[in-house]
Image 1: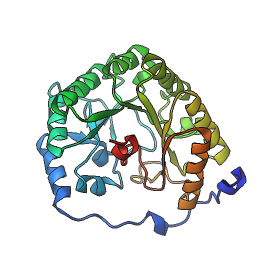
Image 2: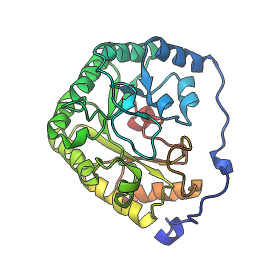
Image 3: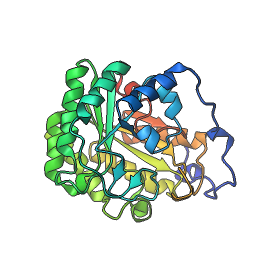
Image 4: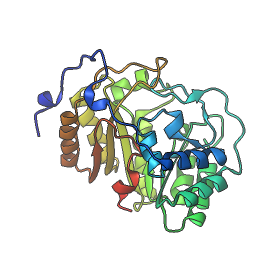
Amino acid sequence: MGTKRELLADESSPPRLPRWLKRNVPKGNANHFTARLIDGLKLNTVCEHARCPNRMECYSQRTATFMILGDVCTRRCRFCSVATGRPGPVDEDEPRRVAAAARELGLRHVVITCVTRDDLPDGGAEHFCRTVAAVREACSAASVEVLPSDFAGNAAAVELLIAAAPEVFNHNTETVPRLYPAVRSPRSSYRWTLEMFRRVRRGNPGIRLKTGLMLGLGETVEELLDTLADLHDAGCRMLTLGQYLQPSPEQMPVVRYVPPDEFDRLGRAARQIGYTHVASGPFVRSSYHAREMVGT
């Protein structure tokens, strides 16, 4: 592994997308099958709403990350393209439809995320648990990964999700503490992110803890390695590192594009810290190849 100085590349943002961030769009009917199924069941996916660059690849493999609790978020994070505003009422039939989609797609690992719902007393935790239960009933052999919001610091909401006993509890740290005010909503707290992981680890040590960070927002390697050490101390052993890409002109710009070899070095550094499962690369996202990471 190189030194911290060697890991830190030129932080100037290039004028155009570098060659390693250009890729072919997968072709085939599986893309359309997945898209039609999701549309027919009136479900949301983070793949669509966050404008994920891997969307067509995942759809072509008949997989998707389900986004529950609607498609309007109560927070406005500067990196995110999900709509912000006043959400509608919770769709009580949504857990059944998510389970039906997971069954129809033949998923062996089901990833469920959500918009942040600060308007709900429990942040949507109970609805999350109902969705996990419905998926388990419909797909008894599948493992479940939850990717919830921070529930606005509501410890009781976290306890509800611990009781649902998902195989993986994934929460995105997104960036280093110094950049939280610039990147995330003012209601987001780095300290609470760490505390959530500690609570899950205490409440059910069998749940595997996972987190993800975006690179290219202006972080230094020293800050990143310190953050990874904090998260490891809190119990995380699964990690994703990916390149932040500006979804539209309305979101914050990319500070720099991190070369693939630097992602490789950072991945090795994370393993040296003690992470057992690491995915590090320009196109890596929090739920990208999630089934392969858990080994199901």
